[in-house]
Image (cartoon, rainbow, N blue to C red):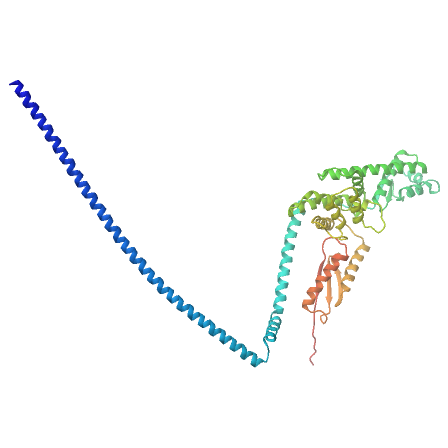
Length: 476
């Protein structure tokens, strides 16, 4: 019984397992069939949707094609109409041209010339007015920019305005020294004045004598020599000559030292010793009571700052500004100005050609070959024209004013000319019967150019041209 029961249990378990497997297999097959059916259904739906969309796109494309064909046809019609209108307008223009030529009695070339003449007469005044406006605007813009750069450079420079005198005082230990300076029958004072080239002024002023000389170098030599003679106490013609000779050598050494100091202070490399000595001699010279070396240093600084403002190398500009007046320290050469003499010296010592040209052209005696020459001109004028820099005599003032008026009176149509404000302003009165408004504009430009070419002056000269016409009647 136990064996039969275990057999029955095994059979029952096996049957259950078979049934369970059969059920699981049936379920899997059923689910797979359902999935396949759903997938086929989805594929069919997608195919149908794609077919519908393709049909819609095809229909839309056909509609657009028909619309494009219609637009093309309409454009062809409009182009044909436009061509017909153009042809008609050409026919009308030719007809009107022939009629106009028939009525006026002119051929096409004559009609064209007449039209151009009419337009020229009609717009000539407007064209001249527009030209003047454009030129004035350009000149004003250039003037404003130049003034801005110049002011920017000048505001960075500080200089003194004190001036040197043409006389110098030397103190004496006692009144008896005046008699010893004069010497027996004036031998000592004559020897002193002949060897130094200066005038010794001995008056009743107690304890002081004056040395007067317009040459600052000679005046400095005389001052040093007189100071040494007074300290030595032994005064004789031979001693005076020896003392003047040693004083001259000392002045040469001082000049070399001043020249080297100027070059070093400006941050420039050492120059030729001869150039530095001549540069130092400018320390003892004056230009309208302005120390020439101080003026040269100031011009060099202005040139360097202006060169930096406009974007060029400031080193050649600084050298040109420092050396522009070196010709004033050279002994006079026949037929050569200080600018040309200085340029010739610098050319001989191998100076930069740009610097040589700037030195030679800073008074417009030759043409400028680079921007450095105009920079030296501007800086030279700015240094000499600043308040307190220079002092002129009555003769030079009268001569400058007279030359300005003479330049203006050389032009035809000018009736009167007057210089004002120490030669800073020139007023020109013209004959209104000879000079019209357009001619007045051209005349004032020519006067300005001639003043710039023929005269040498510091700063600027304002030129005012007056053209006035009055008509007077008296009613009785």
